[in-house]
Image 1 (cartoon, rainbow, N blue to C red):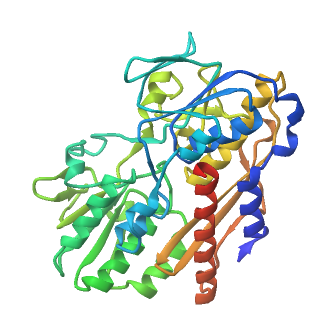
Image 2 (cartoon, one colour; image 1 turned 90 degrees about the horizontal axis):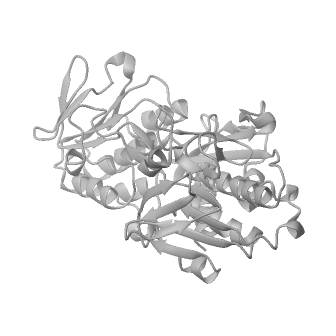
Image 3 (cartoon, helix red, strand yellow; image 1 turned 90 degrees about the vertical axis):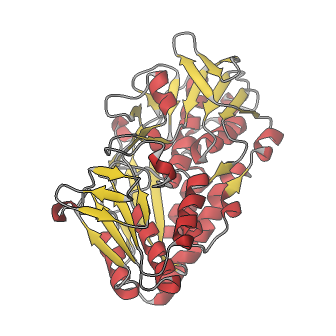
Length: 424
């Protein structure tokens, strides 16, 4: 593997709590601050548990609209009929047992001046510090014709749950020989390699169940994460099932028509029986309401503590952030939650944030039993996120099946670890 770091040690170090060594834990135990976290995914749930560990006397409240969280990682296996959706669902019972107040409801407003959150029943919850982990929202109509109603016919499945099941159902009802289209936006969006993992697994489904059918990828860019590895896998496993067209080959979709199941590029139209539109995205809408999103729709942060650059006493973690070169991924959200929790704990104890090392590893399945990965290592020293030269790396091209199988085992171990850390 072309990486200067041991992948497993990187994974264990990041998930086990990078940065804990910079905390004088004995100085934090008496803080009784009210800390509110909005969003119960990999970022928010991890932050809540971490803060309760660091500040056991603090009042930690997690606000999450859903009683159960549905994970996006591994959901492409669900779409391909390889994994049941139920295995993607996690509850918050462990957090409650640990003394965290979990409120199942939607936050409807944030008053940064008075430091208060309003939820849907008009309950107002004051905070000393607020952490937002709002995930992403779709930019409706960024592609002409693609609004929320259109997504019920042309699913995006970029938020796991009902949309995942809908896309799976459309593949199941596809007649052998009918085409599938996937549209892919320009960056940034949640999980950069995600569309191409999905393409691989849909390719596997078609090859196995509907070999006369084909998946056409219409992509708004000419390069993508792990591109050479994915295209190697497609040539080996799915030469008759997957066709990719990049931006320079008229791959950018400008308009969709759900009624006729048609997508339009600059020069052509394409019709298919099933269409997966992965749309342009932005930070979850509550970020804009809180005043922490800028004109890009994403949230600028201080990488030492993930404090908002736009609002005091608010921190933002996960997919909603502007944290390049870190990608928008579950791994990143989990680690950012820990760094943020440490930063909040230090700040409430009168300490300045401290620099540390961050990492991300992203696994992608190319078949049900083969995976590839990319790893990055970053520094937030000098209040800037920068890749550490010579660290990280990608899976090798031309690897033996045993190497790809080993990465599948690593991916499974990672998913088990991160879900245990977040949800217990």
